[in-house]
Length: 519
Image 1 (cartoon, one colour):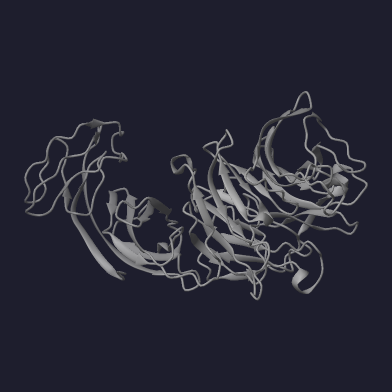
Image 2 (image 1 turned 30 degrees about the horizontal axis):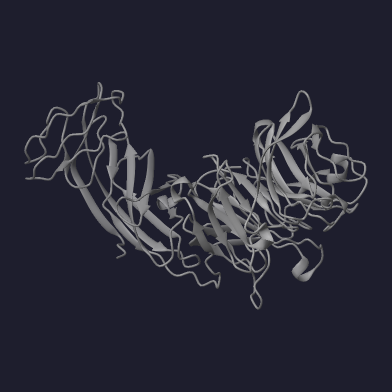
């Protein structure tokens, strides 16, 4: 049940260096200190915590007044205990716009907290953690990643100079998601080997008769845990770099008016504030890339028919004007048409890399000057690759930067030109996830890994995305085929998500829905 505006007194709680504090009474001290009215606890063993600091894992059985003392946890070397007491006043409710998002506000009598977080989950083992921004009024914190129509437990932990104070267990019940979005068919072949986490994506094509297609997040079970309909298709869905907003945009492949015009919305993660940035992102297509400084990189049709690489300023408003960094044709030297379809940020050298489907190439440019660093591959007139070696044919869409010299790329492998000459010359017998390794000194490229779906093969001419995960797995998005697969390094399919007749936009898989993105 939901508990609101409840105060929990944690009185007489003894804080020892290297010992955590639980909410069920006073803690035992090193060498068997006595809880108020309780019997002596067993001696704590020496831990690795430095004197005067709290070690993480030093939880201790507690003693209430008149009760017995549990077994002491590990004691940090050189630490001395201090006494603190605190209360928590907590309110919580699901968001009225996205009822799988919990909103928690709270206060504590702990003096000047310097850090806090909220553990939450389907039971009191929790399993997920939401960081608390102490600069926000009432310490307002969102619980993200919860399933619909479930009761969740949560517990607040706050720390300060007096020690760490942990609240009672509270409960919050999520609501149903009224969306019409069918849960994908999930086939899991090896759950233990999966990366887990959350898949951020959207629908490229609106359902018949609907007013839009949602941006949404799936958990590792394939359950929808976040959903928002901005009134158009949701081809590009990306969290802001600080994780407080979701940027949602439509495909807008044909620049025009009405349904073909750009639709760009920035939505708070609780769904309560939706700001329309469509005018500021005029002529945008496909997807956008939030940057660490708060600015946003994107591409939009230029005056010469090729796309401009553009930057929307940090802190910009719906009336702000984006600046043009460079035109795609200028950057890669082509003489024909262009069709940019993905743009990613390379943080180590502060550059942007874009994919051009018509010209079958990736191009890297400086984020500050627009100067071309290199061009990888060539499939269009006038383009000279900076590298020789094992390349690809048949066009590409999404890609993932693994380092200055390493990329995974969704190779459409199209047999016929979809929008321009660069997307032809593939076999058409199945799209391929490939990894290209560069030798930056010798200017050579080598294909060091690839994966092609089997049973059946999945040829995709429109869209497609790929991402290498931290555990070495790769997630492959077959866009308009409505299939996402997670495979291991040997190409074994660990999990398959199928939307049965509908589709996926671009993807981003994250271990957590808090903090900066994985790419």
